[in-house]
Length: 96
Image (cartoon, rainbow, N blue to C red):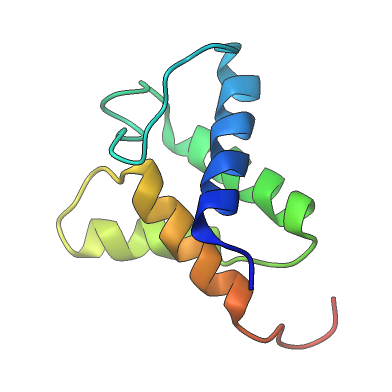
């Protein structure tokens, strides 16, 4: 089991690389769209980079779809980390 803190740290690293914000202050409460000004394509890129890093599918776009269906138009980095950590704890389905 990979701790959520480890996943969160990786998310922070990737976002800093994506935005050029090497010393950017990020917290679990930081909103992906409102606080960081990122777009939906940035969310897809983050999901792809996390899948590459952890070497497995994470169904990342599903979390964004689920939030949108629930009437939420933004997600915190802590919520993203919790979702990714949950996915990492699940068995991998089918061939990779």
